[in-house]
Image 1: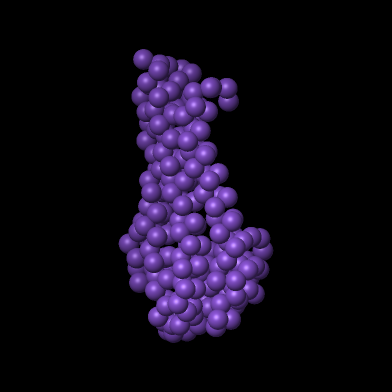
Image 2: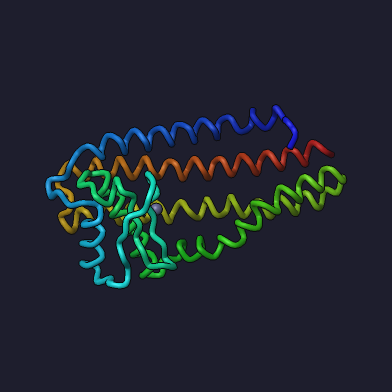
Length: 226
Ligand SMILES: [Zn+2]
């Protein structure tokens, strides 16, 4: 690719928001992973308790390598918690484990946005690669319709990140409700859990914003050719 100063000017707000969100999530996580909950349940116990109380027996809870790699795999029916969450009895661990269980409940209740998000994955895999290629080819060979087709393909990436937002917000909302309802966190401890989940939510907002700016850049690039 070529160097384009406009790219950096346009992307700077996206990069700043991304950097801010990443450092905030790290800071919040570090802070609340040092505060144990009164109940003292580990992340694994939190997840197992929630799943048992909700009558979900098909889903396993297992450890996974890395930091902040926690996720729910709907295909394998597994909640995977990073080592720092799985074995920790901190507020952060309870929040993250409950959040992943929020995704399990979405899966078992057929939550619409989760299904839509899953359906978009093949389109995004194609669009994120083919989109920029079509745009570049269209610009090089001066076939603007081809470039616009690339924009449509690449727009799938933005749609995906936008659909991710309600999925993540809903999982966190469910998580806070669950830790409260099941007495996993008490009183002020829920504020810590909320802080961790809010910080995580901002990283998804930053990612969507970044995808939006990227799309905007491509559109500007094509418009300049006229
Ligand atoms: Zn999530």
